[in-house]
Amino acid sequence: MQLYNLQDNEQVVSFVEAVKTGLGRNQGVFFPTELTPLADVDALLELDFVTRSAKVLRHLLGDELSDETLAQMVAGAFTFPAPLVKVADNLHCLELFHGPTLAFKDFGGRFMAQCLAQFSQGEKVTILTATSGDTGAAVAHAFYGKENVDVVILYPEGKISEAQQKLFTTLGGNVHCYSVKGSFDDCQAMVKQGFLDEELKSRLGLNSANSINISRLVAQVCYYFEAVAQLPKEQRAQAHISVPSGNFGNVCAAMIAAVIGLPISKLSATTNQNDTVPRYLESKQWQPNETLESLSNAMDVSRPNNWPRVQVMLDSGQFSYNDFFSHSVDEATTAAAMRELQQLGYMAEPHTAIAYQGLKADFAPGEQGIFLATAHPAKFKDSVEEILGISLEMPKALADALAKPCLAKPMSADYQQLREAMLAKLG
Image 1 (cartoon, rainbow, N blue to C red):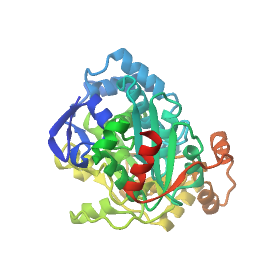
Image 2 (cartoon, rainbow, N blue to C red):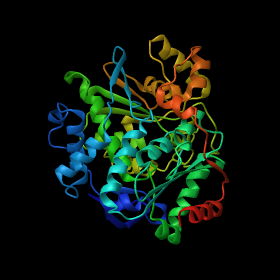
Image 3 (tube, helix red, strand yellow):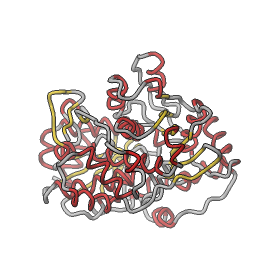
Image 4 (cartoon, rainbow, N blue to C red):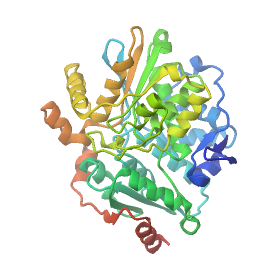
């Protein structure tokens, strides 16, 4: 697999190099030089999840890994299901929260851990990442206790739920967490500065586990095939998928799946009030506003890192602008969508409700609607209980984490402070 840097097209690397590098020159993200269609998608959709995923990844990655190695990596990462739950006629929810940290990012985080274990060959690796909610836990658990790997996680203080936070700030060991006085975009900017710091990169073996990293992105392609595979054969060509979107990595993976042949008729990338992309699609002006806090905090992103990847596929015509939709959903409508789903017999947290609301906006008769549930409702216990008027039982993984003390250290939104802390602790 050859990938090029979207900010510096002359930088072309292999998949292994892209995974180990994380972010390219000039803070550019890597993207495949070519996406080719799969030969027989219908046959693939008849396979089990793990077997099919290995074949999809083989197609994307080429011959950089042997079939046996890739099959072992996928089997080691995807140890939990991604069920498609029927909510109503022509309406389904793809549940991506059955992994160890109860969020969709377990798929990408665990596959990335498999990749780095395979590629690093015992060299020191420091994962530096920012989280708006669920990435932190998925990455922390994927790499926790791994030899020669340290994990540094930045998160915006007071702007993620306690359940999200406790899943990664209570681990200790090789997981180091910093509570940043600022927004997720501030945290993400500090991470990007780290990757421009040649001394830090070389001394600590810096890598990123955000959806910046191509290994996370390709892993997420696989569960869209799993979603469509669970539809009846005669309905697969009518799949309209709605993805709750913050950093736009998840919908980027869906678009890659469509480009290589998965029958997706429409894609909806629905945001909360941080509406940079919906406004851009209307005005063609890229004008990020200050990030606003919301019920759907994992989507509180005004400068999505993965948008350049999505835009490449749209501008090149690989996926049609006519089949791509992006709307913003305000707080009151998010709560109303949660209550509407409750009336349909399905309990959803805010991100999932936003995906449902976005699906409704452009849904047409005859389509099979699939909206993504990216996190377990208990990860947003307070808002779910208040909005739906219910009492939630906590899954054991969350209950255990909530009982432990937070080990995160406070930090200003100041790169030099982060740099000094990392060199003192890890250098």
